[in-house]
Image (cartoon, rainbow, N blue to C red):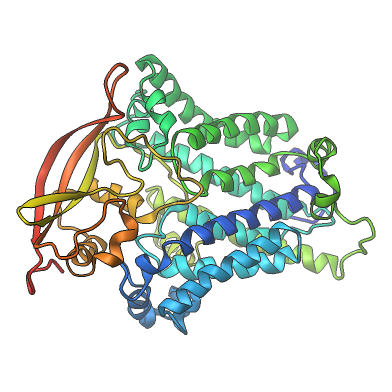
Length: 491
C-alpha cells in the first residue's frame, strides 16, 4: 500500500477514485453524526448510566478494573459519577460540531472518538449495538484522511469498511439457521418485528407476499454482490452506490435505527470521485459558506517525511485488515483456530476491527413487555414513549435519536419466559420505590406509591387494510407481578 495520487499498475482499478473533497465531506458528516450520537446519549445518560440508573456505569467500571485499560479502554477509570457522565456526553457534542464546520477536524474527531469509545467500553447493554462500534471504527479511520491531498491507502481502508458492513451482513444472512433470506420469507416479518418501526412500515408490511419474497432475495443478493463491485473500478462503484444507497433509504423510511443509516451513507461517499461532488457543489446555494469546509487548499506544501507517513498508514492498514478478518472469522462462525481467536480477543475491546452481521435472522414474533402499577384495587398501564403501546398510536419517527431503553425492551420481549435482566429488575424497583426517576421513559403519569408493579407480555401484529388502528395484540407468556412492600421488591 502506497500513497499515490492516481491508480497505477495492473490492479489500479481496485483503488478508489475519491480524494480530499470526499475526505472533507466525510469529516463533516462524521462530525454531524457525533453531534447526534452524543445529543441522543445526553438526553438519557443519567437515567440509564447514573448511580441510580438502570445500568450504573460506575459499577461497570468497578467490575472492569482487574483487566485494566487494555481490556476496557475508557476515560471513566478516573471519574464515573453522574456529573462526569453528563459532562462527557455534553462535551462530546462540541468536537463533533467543530469537525462539522471544518475546524481542525482530525483533532476534534480523535477527541470525539475517544469519548464515545469511553462510553461504549462500559455501556453494556445499552451501548452494545453494532452501529456504536461502527462509529468508533469510522472515527479512527477518519484520522488517516488528509484534507488537501490524495491518500489512496486511507481511502481504500474506508472503502473496505463499507465492504465489511455489507458483505459480512450478507454472509450472515446466507447462513441464517432458518434460511429465511434464501426462501424469501424474511421480509414478510421484518417490517412488523423491527425494534422500532416507522409509520411506513405498516404499509410496507401489507404489500403482497410475492413482493416480500422478491425483496428478501434482492437484499441478500445486494449485500453479497454489490460490495464486490466496490473494487471493480468506477462503474462498479457507481452500481454499488445506487444499490446500497437504495437499501439504506428503505431502512431510513421504515424503521428507526438511530444514527446508523446516516453513518452508513457517509461511507458511501468513498464510492464517488471528487469531481462528482464538485459538480453538485457548484449547484448549491450558499457556496461561500461551505467552500472553506469542502474545498481543498491549493497552497498546501508537500508533507514532511512522505514515505514515512505512507508507510505508517500502510502498516496500520495491514493490522486493520488482518484483525478485521480475524474478528469476522470468529464472529461469523467460520471455525477459527487458536491464533485467530487470540487476535479477536485482543482486537475486541477497541471496537475498531469489527465484524458485522446485521439482521442475520429475522424475528418472526413481536412480543412487547407492558408495565403497570397497582393502587386502590386497579391497575394503571404505563405507556412508554416510543415502543408499541396503544393500538391506535402510529409507530413513531424517532431517528436519528435512539431511545435505548425502548430499543432494549424489544430484546427482553423475545426472552419473556426467562428471568428479567438486571436493567429490567432495576426499572421495576424504580417503579415501586422511586417512580420519579423512571417517569422520563413513560408518557403515562406513574403511581407515586403502588402496592404492586406488573410486566405483562403481548404479541403485537400490524393490522390489515380495512381494520381499525395500527396494531392488534394478544396476551402471551406468564405475567410477572412484583410486590412493592419492603423486602419483596425484585432485585
